Amino acid sequence: MKLLFVHQNFPGQYLHIARHLVQTGAHEILFVTEPNQNSLPGVRKITYRPRRPANRATHENARDLDAAMIRAEAVAAAATQFKNLGFTPDIIIGHHGWGELLSLPDLWPGAPMLGYFEFYYRSTGLDVGFDPEFPTPATQFPQVRAKNAVNLLALALDQAGQTPTQFQRHTYPEWARPQIRLIPEGADLTVCKPNPALRRKTCRIANLSIAPRETLITYVARGLEPYRGFHVLMRALPAILASRKNLRIAIIGADEPSYGPTPPGGSWRKLLLAELGGAIDPDRVHFLGRVEYDIFRTLLQRSDLHLYLTYPFVASWSLRESLAMGCAVLGSDTGPVREFIVHGRNGLLCRFPDPAALAEAVLSALENRPMLDQLRANARAEAEATLDLNQHIEAFLTEITRLTGMAP
Image 1 (cartoon, rainbow, N blue to C red):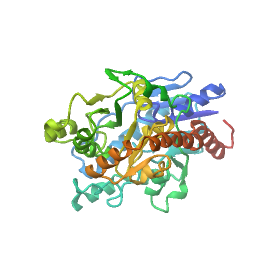
Image 2: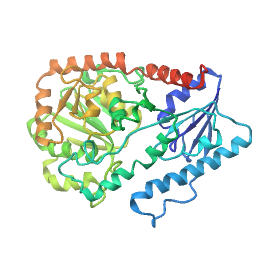
Image 3: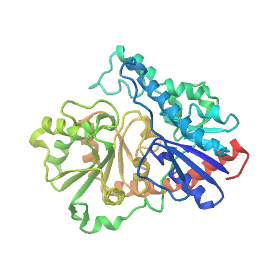
Image 4: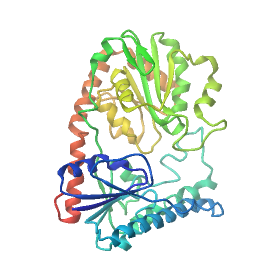
C-alpha cells in the first residue's frame, strides 16, 4: 500500500501508526512536513516551505485562513513533484489544523482521505470565557468563529475524519459529527509503567535529589500558562507549602505559552513569581523547563501526587501517560479530564479554576495515603483496559481498511 501522511511538525500524532506500518515491510510511506530534525527509518520525508507568512494587511480575523491557503499551496506544489514521478497514494492521512490537506483532493480525486479534526472553536461553552479572570469581550467573538474557517473547508471536502476523544468530537456541530470517527489515542504501556521502588529510595532526577520521606508533587504542561491552569497552581502553592514542610513540587514546561496570550513581561512564570513574592520557596519549587522524555517519565513514576489542570480544551498526551504510569492524578473538573478520570475511582477531580479549592484538594489527598495507593493501582488497571497504544493502532488500521478496502 502507498500512504501519504501530512503534518507540519513531523511526525505529529502519527509516530506510532507510521512506525507500525514500517515494521510490516509492506508499504511505501511518504510524509510531507515542514523542515525539522526528526526522522523515522522507512519513512520518506518530503519537506515544504510556505512561500510567505500571512499578510499583515489581511484582516486580523482572516489571517489564519490566509496562512492556511499559503500552506495548502506549498503542500500541493511539493506533492505535484512526486505525483509527476508516478506516486499515487492509496490513502492520504493528515491533520486539518493548518490547511495542508485542502488542495490534495484536486491532485488525487480518487484517493480517500482520513483527516484529523482536533477542535471546533466556540465563543461560549468551551475555553473562551471559561476563566472569569480572563473574560473575552463580545467584540472578539467574530475572530473566534473565524478560526473555524479551515475546519469548515475541511468538512466540505466530504472526506473521512477522525478525532481521539468524545470531548473533541462533541465540540463540532451535530451535523458534522457523523463525518468524524472516534479513534482513541493511548499510551505505550511498556514504556509508561509504574515504578513504585522510586518512592522507597533517594531518587536523583535531573538536578533534583528526592528522599523517601519527601512528598513530591508533579505538574506538566508544554507551556506554563492559564489554559493549563498554571496560574491556579501557583496561587495554590503558598497554602500547600505552608502546610507541608517536607513537600516539593517539580514543574515541567516552557515559559513560552502554547495557547492564549503572552503576558506583559514575556512569561506567566515571571509574572506570577512577582505577584507571589517570597511565598514561593525556590528551594522547594523546581522549575525544570522542557526536559528529556526519560526525566519526565521518571518524575511521574516517583510522584506522590500529579496535577493535571486544563480549560475545556484538548487534553494533553501527558494525562494519558500519567495514568498509564500509575500516578495518583488530581485533575481539573473539566470535560476533557472527566473523559479519562472518574473521581474517586482512578483519580481525583477538583473545582477549577479555584486556587483555594486546589490547595484544599491537594492537602486532603496527601492525608490519605491508602487512597492514593488505590488510585495508583486503579489508574494503571484502567489504562491497561482502555489506553493501550496497540488498541489505538488496531482501530486506525481498521479505519484505513474501511476507507481503502485494503488490509495494511
